[in-house]
Image (cartoon, rainbow, N blue to C red; front, side, top):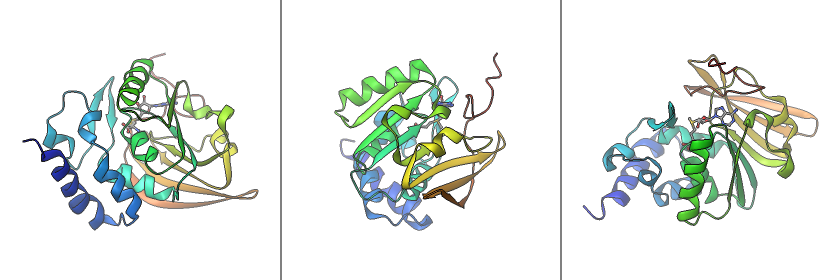
Length: 218
Ligand code: SAM
């Protein structure tokens, strides 16, 4: 059906996001606008808007819509910010952020995923997103400091380069814990002080890199 995707997005917002405490109107508008189905290769339309993560190839996933929303809301963006994302994956989170921030810098360690997503974002005219292939646990120092940093893979701890690249008042949102369950932590820079709070439990694929988990294939 031609107009089904906008209706599925409305349902996703009304049933999965608003009742669970996503109240930032700009975040909700971004979810109504960005076509999640376009970021998942070969997906069934209804499945794309389901309340769960989905595979995107190479053993990686696009996160559950609610998790993308809660992490985005935690950044408290008001417009114009520089945001760093670690774990580009499908590009959906980056596309949501691109509607709320000035520029999105996104780092992905798997080259084939990064290239496919870069091409998709270029074709769809998301012209305020820059992608780099590399180890995101090192951040992207050339463009820092960042007003927001969002890590979309689970880390054993807080990578120090990311804290160093956080601007004054900036927020770092990161799932931290074991390789099968984590807590979603939000760290805010206030001068030399870092204030931390816990946004609840979550489950992410592992953040692999120098300041993350070691690559078990080596
Ligand atoms: N944000 C993504 C989206 O919207 O689809 C979801 C990302 S998926 C849950 C996690 C991604 O993090 C994977 O694509 C994985 O390859 C990537 N990743 C894991 N460790 C990384 C690292 N050190 N640097 C950059 N990307 C990493």
